[in-house]
Length: 275
Image 1 (cartoon, rainbow, N blue to C red):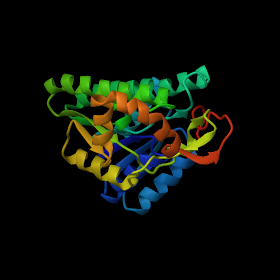
Image 2: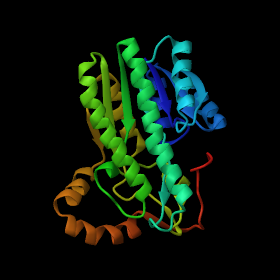
Image 3: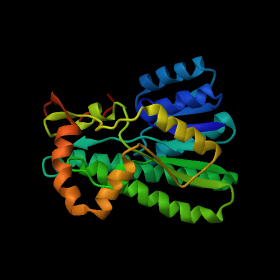
């Protein structure tokens, strides 16, 4: 299977690349850092898979087109495009600098649009293909201090559902959404931060391998939406059905469980440049 992966240099993207390579698939690794991608590619080859490195900023539609064209040129076709790339910023809405807020939306929303449009155009030409978007349980609820990320994941969820309806008329083409909950990845520590304390995944925290198992299962059995995280149903239920209770509890819980005790000064993290 030929799988192109955005955000492949770390976190869920890297873990998925390694799992797919171990399965014997060919992976095309996309991300902003060539150095990190080369490291992941070497790990994939050690596991028995073939790996191609394709430095890509998903917020640039031309670079996404080059990624897909390169995949087809090197591998003959593309079976799956797994979109994991995302950035995040912590802080109260009015405290996050406008340029940081806008960059999160540019990468997370526009980047997803660029990937989805390019992938679906190619899949339609091929007559087959599978787009897997990595969203978040945050796309179904709204914790505080992460407003740009919340906005972007709601947009990803909405786009995925719209596309799922549209591709029903295209035989062989599928769109899936993966909705992880609290997962142990570096995204929290590398995020932009304007709240004074380094972020952390709130408990209960799932290992990234649970997400990769879900992704691998989707590559052989496409489904609409696969939730990963034991607390996801409870959080979504509270947000949707008891909003008054949710609003009272969510701020103190976020301060206590979603932020570590490690202090930090204002920083854009990896939002503008890879770390």
